[in-house]
Amino acid sequence: MQTAGVFLAACILFSGAHDTADRIPVRTLDELPRHAYPVAGTVSELIRSDESFRRFASAFRRDLEADLQAYKIEDASTLRQMYINLLTLDIMERRHASVRARVEMIRDLEDKEAKRLTTGLTALAVVRAREETGEDGGERFLAAFADHLRDQLADLPWDVIRTRIVSRKGHLEIMTRNLLLGIVQAQFDPVASAKGEISSELAGQVVNIGYALKHALPLKQPMLEVYGEFIDWRGGAGRDIWTDRALTLSADAGLSEVLVAVWDSGVDMSLFEGRRFVNAAESFDGRDDDGNGFVDDVHGIAYDYQGRRDPSLLRPIGDAAPRVYRALDRVKGSLDLRASVDSPEAAELKSYLDGLDPTAVKGFIEDMSLCAQHVHGTHVADIAARGNPYARILGARITFDHHVLPELFTAEMARRHADAYRETVAYFREHGVRVANMSWGWGLREIESILEANGRGEDPRDRAREAMGILEILEGGLQGAIAGAPEILFVAAAGNEDNDPEFDAFVPASLDLPNLLVVGAVDRVGRATSFTSTGRTVRVYANGFEVVGRVPGGRELKLSGTSMAAPNVSNLAAKLLVLDPDLTPREVVGLIEAGADDVGAYRLIHPRRTAKLLRR
Image 1 (cartoon, rainbow, N blue to C red):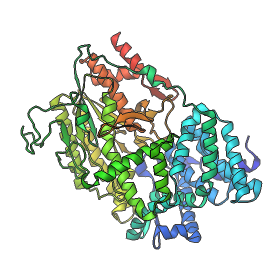
Image 2: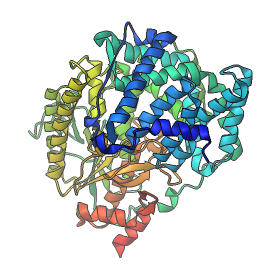
Image 3: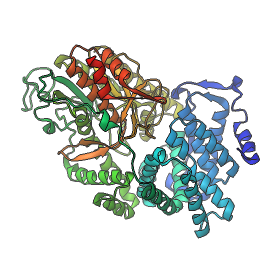
Image 4: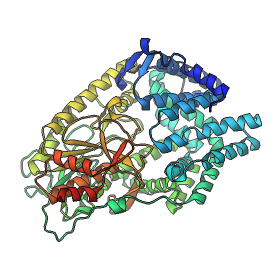
């Protein structure tokens, strides 16, 4: 039951919020207002100055509260993020009654059980420790904070929250003051210096980094200790539901082959010898032997960031190779930390971050990003082909920028990419692809951020219009290409933004086509991951948490994301087509959905049951 103080705060927070008569409805991200915040000097200087940061945060709060009063926002994830930003401000400004009310508001908007149960635990522990000790730091405060955090966790079902707590501990392990300051220097300072302002999107990140530096970092050690206690005490990760659901095809069954396209960041085809697409009319000689416009397309085709054809199916990394493979160890270290696994890689990463100078953060992030893009497509391909000796992999490389400040993406480039989408799907059709996995996407926020990083637009609204124009070009090319290939089933990742792809205009996950199946991610026990996007277009969910797959060179890694969930569904679709090559994409989708389990709002695939439906 709410106390009188919390009830009063809730009344204040909700004042006018449900008076919908005069509020403007917002049904898509593009309809939300954009704001800009002047920055005198650099963001680094702003964060170091308590007074400048206070004024900046106050302006950010005024716009958030005004937008909530003026607009009827119909997307829960957008409302949730706005309230989370306000909660951060409430904690910093010691508005304790508001903190309590805000936590309840956020929980009411959360449909993922683990996130709902763990939302606000830290905020409430801070408030209770402040009230109990009358302090905001020091040994007494930290001890009280740890006790209150421990008490809250003790009341929660461990089997539901375990994955989230383990992930939180991992994130804390790599959070350092120098890493945060380096992010500000590398990402925010150049934007502010170029325009003298930053957008509301970046402003929210600045506020959260300011909070982390001033409030979260001092809590890091007690949080690690409490989380570690519960992980050691409660242990087990729960029963893996996917082992019993797995479907493996026998190599001696004499079944038909199926061609699966992995439309991704590039595939190391040397790992799939005997199981890869081969264009017999082409050879690796630097020429277009078959006259189809592609050079050396022996195992597939590729396009660079500019949207131009490129002969390298695996993304070239050139002189960055030594750094990329060193970054691969650090990627593993990061994953181990997030899984609460002690390993040499985890220890090395913590040691490296502890001594990392802020000026070196930009290079560290870019090497990690380039590494992620280098391994992504191969990992996806390995998942798509697992347990299916009849699957043949065709690679189709698409390229994204890995820099902290990405290269400008223009309407002209978008038109080339739209043409590339049409050419890629035409290539699929020509060679008989039946399933195409797409663990990637473009979003309006992403394009706006690229434009902002390059100083585009007279103001945020002008930049948003340009971004929407670019996205519409990409969407038109991709939608037309998919719709024009009704014999191919396209499987797309929903995205890792914990949003609704339709509201946020995330392509292709926002598209609604009969031969497109959008996939969200659950964990090993079948619960929705904290990161997975959800919504009307997300039809099924598959394992997307710590999924094993090979990366270039053959090393195995456990990676997480809807990028890993989607190829699990492509894997099932390909196996159904091996068992019955006459199935249409509509029939494959129908079988996958009919065989799935309805777990709350999520439909979890069940490969073994789906295959039994086909045999019937």
